[in-house]
Image 1 (cartoon, rainbow, N blue to C red):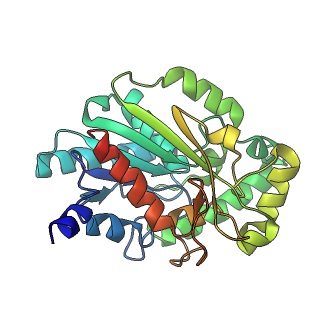
Image 2: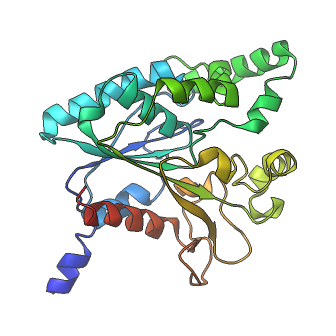
Image 3: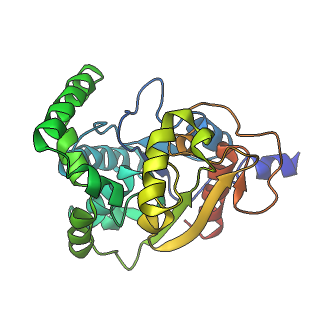
Length: 280
């Protein structure tokens, strides 16, 4: 009985978990993070969300994230939080800390496939005719508003994913010495790993080698880089897989090494339990 109690507290970190989503979806009843939050709570974690726009700019989204963070700190009495952020959310986490000066409330930042060094693929995309990019972005903004975004700005989001923008961003937003930063990269095995990501994966492979269909390991490595993870079996792990988009395990096969994952929820349990072991 005692062992079961200990097991179910392995994610009971000193500081609560602040989950920050990436582009394209919002924190809603459907949930950006699939089964992950419920699994973390099952093992003792305290979890809350940012509720920023799906396709908002870094600046606008961080105003919402700041409000969510300060409200939670006030209501819960927590001294600090541990951030877990996916994709663009990781960049917003760093802006929240450095530009907005909220580092005193942050113990650690864990980023899952965040474009810290910019996307070379996005560099190429932004060279397309401007009227096409702005027109397509306006269409996305329309649907994002229908989905609940207050101030979507897809075109600005795309600009903020380029290597040029991120080079400047990194100079203006250095890491805080008292905060622990770590990052994770992921890899699809082939274009058939995820049909939805087949075209992006092929494009990124031609331009920049292996990736999760969106970003290469070199583009996401930041702080304590933990390596490149993939799924058991032939499938690999795509950018949507990283946040449990399908709500199913990748494979029945057991992992053969520390970089293979059969169930993404177990991966998150592991990274949160590590935070607890480190005193966060």
